[in-house]
Amino acid sequence: MSVLRSVVTGVGGYLPETIVTNDDLAKIVDTTDEWVRERTGIRRRHRAAEDQAVSDLAVEAAKRALAAAGRTPADVDLIIVATTTADLTFPATAAIVQRKLGCPVGIAFDVQAVCSGFVYGLTVADGFVGRGHSKCALVIGAETMTRLMDWTDRGTCVLFGDGAGAVVLEPGEGQGTTADRGLLGFALRCDGTKQDLLYVDGGPSTTGTVGKLRMLGNQVFKHAVVNISEAVIAAAAQAGVPVADIDWFIPHQANERILKGVAHRLGIDEHKVIQTVADHANTSAASIPLAWAEGMADGRIKKGDLLLIEAMGGGLTWGACVIRL
Ligand code: UT7
Image 1 (tube, protein in one colour):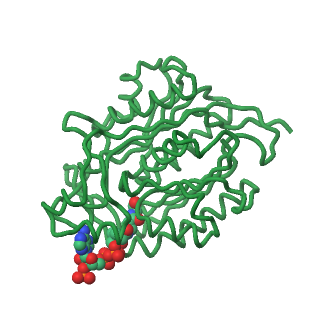
Image 2 (cartoon, rainbow, N blue to C red):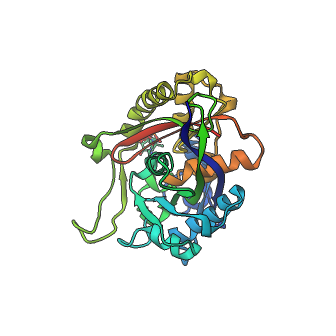
């Protein structure tokens, strides 16, 4: 049976130039390189320049993804930006990216699911591409998380970084089997009762300010491994593939202990895990496409491979997708 699939045809990542090490942070908060590395696996993170907005990061990642796909901005008819650090309260960062890239009039909007934003955004894009409503879609995860930090809170300010990653999605004819290229299965979740564990304490309709990130890290940690594993199993079941068949596991990069814990619980070999948390820290919605771009650039991830992505973040939201590249 012939089916339309959403196929990833290009991936790109962009990290701003400035690198901030754990030792740099130890000069402004009561922390040590040793504590941050042992508890999180993080060694450094990138920080956007003062004159760089999140749309600038998104545009760079998008250009690289389009080049990898052999497409130009003129081809793009759908842009979804997953971000929690928009340039402005409105318009959507996706509209700004459309203008900066010089794409024609098309569909453009943002998805707000915090660290799970890229997983949510990819699934939403599949609804357009997989039904023939988009011929060339950009799904971008882009964040300037350092702008949300309370630089007096050592429990959070050492954890996050800035960056952007993007994929190009195009329709492809499949046979309705697990050998098809494209998005094969997904699971999305949100439990709004866990809002107080991870949030930003400001917003246009409450304080009228942007606010700062607040997190009860150890409580978020407790939910992470179990919840993520359940979503992965559901996504793999929907795709019709055993988790053991996954070639590359590309998790959201929040904490090395979480991603190793999920891999262990699911029986995924550590060598199949793409890890960038040491050098990128937690870039929220950008972390999966950034890691994916790195795995492609160094030749590990290849066309035809079966990929598993997953994330968890504020909401609490979480989810997973199974994709054949
Ligand atoms: O992407 C969104 C999802 N977010 C996550 O997945 C984050 C999940 N959580 C985590 O990754 C971990 O919980 C953290 C890395 C945030 C914290 O690690 P932890 O092992 O859960 O530590 P903790 O929060 O229980 O704190 C242990 C101790 C505390 O001191 P006391 O009360 O035991 O004296 C903290 O005050 O570590 C202290 N601490 C620090 N010490 C040095 C907290 N932050 C720091 C720090 N440097 N930066």
